[in-house]
Length: 126
Image 1 (spheres, rainbow, N blue to C red):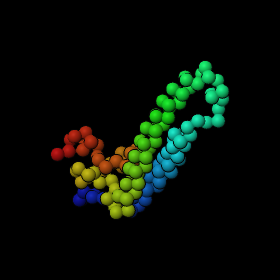
Image 2 (cartoon, one colour):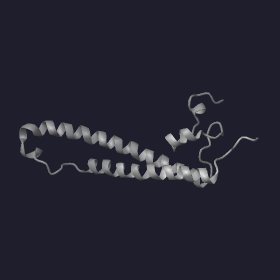
Image 3 (tube, rainbow, N blue to C red):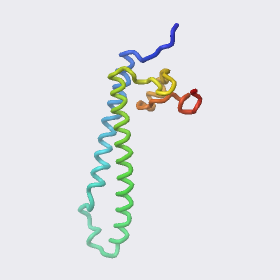
Image 4 (cartoon, rainbow, N blue to C red):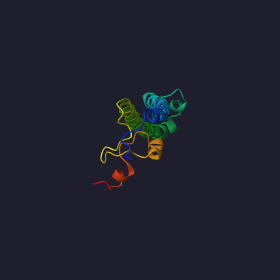
C-alpha cells in the first residue's frame, strides 16, 4: 500500500469546519480586544477623583498595551487560519512543509493551522 499523500475531500471538509469555528471565535475575540484598545477613556468615575486618577491611568495604559499585544497575536492567528483555508482549497492542507508527509490528524485537530509535522517541529526531519 502506498503512503497517503493528501487528505481526502471529506477529511478536508472536516478540517474546514474546525477552522471556520475557530476563525469565527478568533474574529469575535479580536473585535473585543480592538474595541478595548480603541476605547481610550470609558464613561467611568475615575476622572472625578484626582487622588486615584494617577494610579488609574497607569493601570489603564498597561492594560491597553497588553490588549494591543493580544490583538496583534489574535490577528496573526486569524491570518494563520485563513492561510489554512487556502491550503484546504488547493488541497495541500495537512502536508508538512518540510517533510512533504501528512501531518497527523490529531495534531491538525488541536492546531488546525499547523504546517509542520511533529517530527519536523522537533527537528527530527532531515
